[in-house]
Length: 114
Length: 114
Image 1: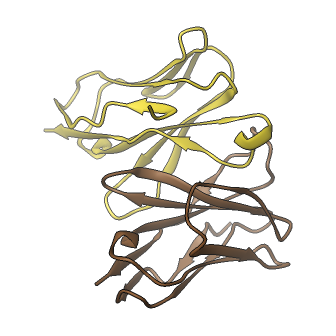
Image 2 (image 1 turned 180 degrees about the vertical axis):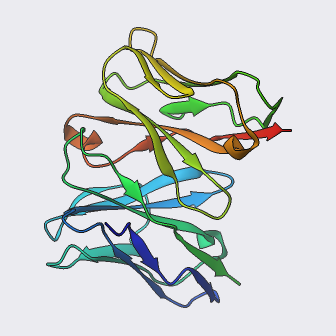
């Protein structure tokens, strides 16, 4: 079974631009979560989608948004990029939202903002 | 204070050593505990998953949970150079705002030298 895939793997943008990242979950998984990983803050939760609805949200500004499609694929968008948005963005999928549903991570998209 | 505290290391040990990695947490709602391993430029991969207090063993790895002390550990026996990676503890609750998301420690960078 294929794992979680994320595209693109690398992105370079300039301040003020916007970016869209894509995540395809493991087949059959309906929950997709997004995390930002930086050396200073570690892994921080962005948001979680289940059945096309945002179910949980972390403490990030409104410039960070996402959505989920009927096939469970998810996208996240960051508008008006800032230098501090440079990070590895990780997507994780799980069967459902239960605590027993393991989250499996993709390889991440490394975003560099210049 | 972060909800999950983990000593970032770095930790450097010789091949064959026993490695002990630890995390403490403050939220009593956490019920599920995980250890992820992350190699450089890769996404985290699930190593161990535990639910109740006690020990769980898988090959050279043992995960230990002490809910009364809010303390979890990962032991690696007979460590190998291939174990060199960053180890992240993660946990989640069973409901409310803790559902659908993982809370991570900062990660401990481990190097096992031959």
